[in-house]
Length: 270
Length: 331
Image 1 (cartoon, rainbow over the protein chains, first blue to last red):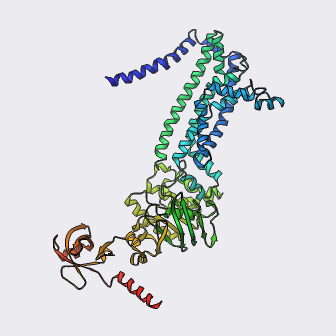
Image 2 (cartoon, rainbow over the protein chains, first blue to last red; image 1 turned 180 degrees about the vertical axis):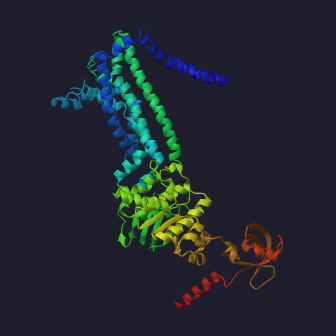
Image 3 (cartoon, one colour; image 1 turned 90 degrees about the horizontal axis):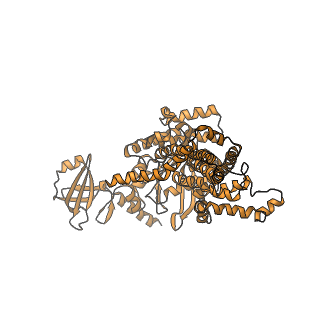
């Protein structure tokens, strides 16, 4: 009996908290058929928001992959002074409210900020442009690749790299031919999480955006803007688009994680 | 290729893995580095390979000081206890790895890998992944991979330690035959004295970071430099306060000069060989004697019988004492 209550209690809770609201967004979106949804999504403002979101994501994600793999490798393989500090700092974006991240970027890149002063003097405005939004996004999505890569690097150990060295490989060759392929699923998994976070980021980006409709709104900002204007069809449609993208990412992630489990089962045991 | 290790020391924190170790390894030989776990033997091998750097001392390969030469330029093959197979590569790609790094022309790689896979009996499994192989097959693949680059020196770190007894026995014999064909100077680390005795030309016994003795298997077995080597290379029992091998004790039912009386306590049959435990009347310290099934049948012993034990033959121990006396006199 208690087993029954626990099991269906959890399911009911999840349904009430997650499935029902998202389902409601879907229902509301298509309340008047697909026509208005298409119109709302193909409007100039919505397309602009989607484009800006993609731009920010496409820049932020590669930066975090390269940084994440490199830093992960350093943390797992090299003696480092203040390793604990680096380790803690990487978790900072997880722990800190995105609004504070946005604020930090704001302070640094404003006309009077340390970096901003210099950049404005050279005619490169950053604050209130896509550049500031990208910087904020890189910040908030920084830990994902590192956090995925480090445990896998620690688990596979250094023997394969040593074997490569004995066989004549330089450190760079060993990294690209042996280490990177061995951690590839961790990198993929971390990348997917980074993409999800970058596309969905609201708080940090909101503070450094000039918030002009059809120009400097990402998809989440656009949803918020439409809700504020009581333009429910546009808000629901854009919201649903975000939800669908997340769902696809989730499916992809589940597929990858099951592959990864298989790989570790067969790979690391031998 | 000959190897000389000169006064090498290595510590990990407070732990002294090697203390002033000097070793000479003859070219073309199959040498075993034998010792208990944690005795420093793997560290020695890894220092020869350049996977570990010595705190002090030098490593010479073929007379050339390679102490500061990186691993990849030492021209060695290394086989790891846990195979270190490249998990994302097929057997073929694993074996071809070193050749690809060396930018060997493709047709030559193809030929060489085929030859090696045949040599290690994996020719049918070239497109398998390591996870699809048994432990023995993985280790043979690792050996082929190490041999692919034609190393002048082959180093194996407890190569069969992770395998079960039967496979270990097979691979051990196979390594000996392979060595007789290829003649590459080979050094392998093991904690299994039987493995070392069976296939090595030369054994170096290492314990607590120091070399206890080195020499041929027979030298070490018959003329151990100290009690540790004696105990590590074979069974030892104590007779009249002296260490002696159980098969060097003569057991009889009648008194003979120099023999001591004992009560038969236990007879354990181990197939062809029989282990007898007897308790001397004088000191009650049990003595183990090793006899053949035939000998025990002839004696027709029963537990509780009185038997007479004597250090057999002219006794190798006594030989040693005599030579030492001669030396004393000469000096």
